[in-house]
Amino acid sequence: MESVKTLKQPLVAKHHHSNQILKNFWYGIEHSAAISAKPKTITFMGHELVLYRGTQGQIIALDGRCVHRGSELAAGWVENDCIYCPYHGWRYEADGTCSHIPANQPEVSIPIRAKLRSHQVQEKHGLVWLFWGDLPVDESPSIPDLPEFTQAGWRTVSGSFTWDGHYSRVIANTIDMAHAPFVHATAFGRKESPAVQAYKLEMSEWSASGFITFETKPAYSLKLILGNNPPNGIFRATFYMPNVSRVDLQFGKFQFVLFMVHLPVSEMQTTTKWSHIRNFVTNPLADSFMRQDVVKTFVQDNLAVKIQAGAAPLDLTEEVHAPADAIELAYRKFYAQAVQMGWSEG
Ligand code: FES
Ligand SMILES: [Fe+2]
Image (cartoon, rainbow, N blue to C red):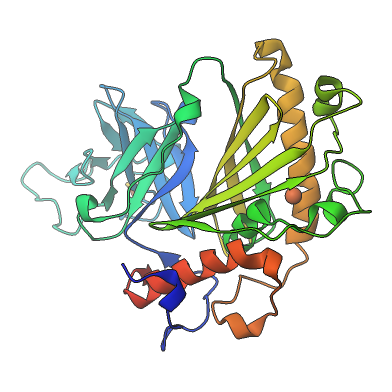
């Protein structure tokens, strides 16, 4: 893979079309616990999919609209790994093939085009991951690790938050180093010290990470936990192409990880499926406080994201950048690199 530093801007597809999607990646799209035998529609950048669990507990993911008259299949029912359309009862197998049209006389054959696209999914870290693309999976970037999720001494609480913005803006917000003094001024943001330490980027394949230390201003639950003389904080931001970000916060021995997959719903809407994993007050009784802290923070962040202009432009000259933006620029360069490789559609 070409290194990000030497990367030239693509000649075509200069702009990040707002309904464009990168392909040949695994996208985190939902919490595992949200998928059951009852079919559910998930909208992935305008593509409606239906997901449900089969008899072995495996997740089946198909295009979400019946090829007959466009009914939402999630309104239908599931039997033996098959999904039935609620309108005229067409039956689709787990691979998407229509295997029964009830209105047909027995001698009538099923049209060859009566088939839904099926999609590869896997479950990891309590999340459902959808493969979008045409490259063999073993030649495609893999799903990032999340060791804390299964480590003893860590407690996970999870949830979902819907933003009024394009996922390129949402993912940038979650790894942004410079907004807290303004967007989170009433909480943990220190308006009196907005300067961001110079930081180095650690690059890996399709991923980058950087950290800064800062003077802690505890807010919400951390106020109770850290007390009046909190240690300096370490904030680490990491992203993984194309829709995953991770924030690590450390205050002395207290640490938490916020692992986020950002489902691109449409050009204007993104749903973040998040997991907050902490190594302190691991008693489940504290879960609701942690959940509230995350949601309050996202509500403030969403106010910033919803007033931004459209999707992040891929042409870096369209906006002006400062050193604190280095991590977001790395994201945009990886994005442009994938586009250059032909890994985009829409
Ligand atoms: S619309 Fe689905 S069976 Fe007719
Ligand atoms: Fe924020």
